[in-house]
Length: 354
Image 1 (cartoon, rainbow, N blue to C red):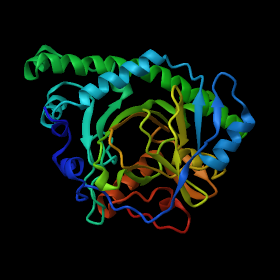
Image 2 (image 1 turned 120 degrees about the horizontal axis):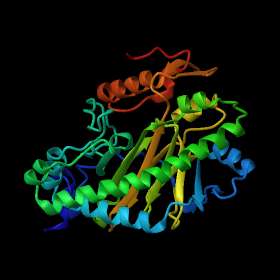
Image 3 (image 1 turned 135 degrees about the horizontal axis):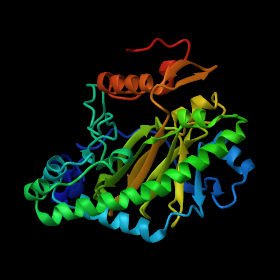
Image 4 (image 1 turned 90 degrees about the vertical axis):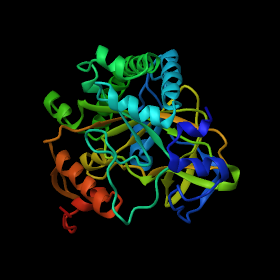
């Protein structure tokens, strides 16, 4: 099988000959020649001063000594890469056939609550060069693969998907523990005195999900291909494990910088909900994935966690809203306008689109 057969047809011309038809428009924004060093937080010895600075001035930091077993991360990367390396048509059939909450997507990171790609408005740029699968962690233990599933798909592929699910469950337990601990530490830096009930309102473990992403290689003649468009996360906290390929860029002081991969670390970034909870004291960082003359694919695993859906977020900078309302507004904007507007929709002077 040719490597291009594992990618959606819309990606294949870019991989083969550098055609730009499947890539999003590239913004004429300067990217510095050098990588930027983001703050580093030691999870074994959380320094509240460094954590405060990272959340206030950056919205992103690197986490070391996180305690996630390195063999587990390696195994998850290996088996999820094998799964995503299947022929495109096989992946579509496999995920559709089995009785599992895991779902396959491509061309956009904008998904609905079920994990299906949102149809984007006419104003949207072309497809992002990314594919992957979405895994709502709370639904994994209750899901089953029955004998009929195996009969509907080849046994080897069925076994591969089941093995991937087992690894993601284990990885999810580790990463959820980290997210809860980090949120409690961040709340302390904000002097938020939260009861156990309030903590779960603001960061509800059962909302956690994992998305595995794969970005294809591109021919050198393609120049810079946009793997994922500029955005902020809608989460409270997002935790990224990436390979050594690179491509993540962040907005800092109105300019774009590359974040260099560092082995055995995780990247934590704050999302829109943390910015709102902190009353804009902390920031939801703008980021994207942009590839320049990338001859190898990029692989990453990202965990997202959200507030309870009916929890009311109150802030002096925004109208009171629940996460469900925020989510519905984001999806309406993506479907109508082709892009996320986010927190700007909830400022006092901004009328809601819905």
